[in-house]
Amino acid sequence: MKVFDKIADVQNEIAQLRKQGKTIGLVPTMGALHEGHLSLVKRCVAENDVCIVDAFVNPTQFNNKTDYDKYPRTVEADAKLLEGAGAAIAWFPTESDIYPEPDTRVFNLGPLAEVMEGPARPGHFNGVAQVLTRLFDIIKPDRAYFGEKDFQQLAIVRELVKNYNIPVQIVGCPIVREADGLALSSRNMRLSADERKHALRISKALFESLKKMDTMSVAEVRKWVCDEINSEPCLEVEYFEISNSLTLQPVENWSDAENIVGCITVYCGEVRLIDNIQYKKA
Ligand code: AMP
Image 1 (tube, rainbow, N blue to C red):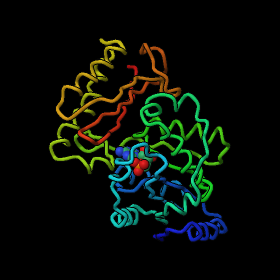
Image 2 (cartoon, helix red, strand yellow):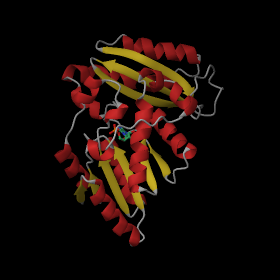
Image 3 (cartoon, rainbow, N blue to C red):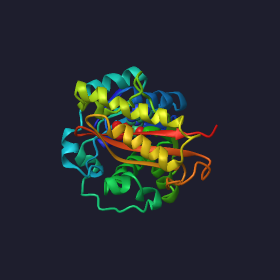
């Protein structure tokens, strides 16, 4: 595996690989890698001649300075994990390389960005669009891999490449969970042992809510999930929306859409955790 930080070096390498006719897959991450990220990397390795993983804590997508400052950074461990997962290139860009000048671009991401994380984290998706368009422009990957853990982000990335005619195939990958059900997240590292125990209630409530679809309305399930989680110490639901999986607009009835997703954000102490569940009709 080759490790780079400078854009020029990474582009040089890619130019050589392109000359040899190799296909290139990109896995964009913010580092602090875990098995969730590695599932994307392994899929990327399997489907492309070359897998590039970048790890960059993108400042423009953080609307909260403390969250940015406290975001875990584990470069050496990340490089080892990437090597083990079969990545060909690990790229750890510097901020001044990605943003030689402040990025003032404003992206039109439409109604998908106006719900859930949109109002909860103003500017977040614009920052995601800024960094991804830079990464896509620098690497020009054939495919790019994203996790369904960030369900809204995946939908917005698909919209971004469609609206801005970016020639990359977006591949979505299922959520990877701990054995007990907690969705893997770099932010889990920040949980105390006690918080970690309470955090389990999030995925438990989501899974249990699947069984309530036959007897409860959408509004009732929504309230039930929020009450379950809020009754657990340390946990506070920021939002829980039950929505059409394609438009991300809230549904009123289980019959309103073919595919329905429940997206949740919960504060566990000071750590902001997200998760989601697909509501499948029997
Ligand atoms: P992050 O480093 O948190 O920005 O995540 C980088 C990519 O990994 C994003 O596409 C995430 O959706 C994906 N990812 C993070 N956690 C998981 C997980 N538990 N399962 C699947 N994908 C994940």
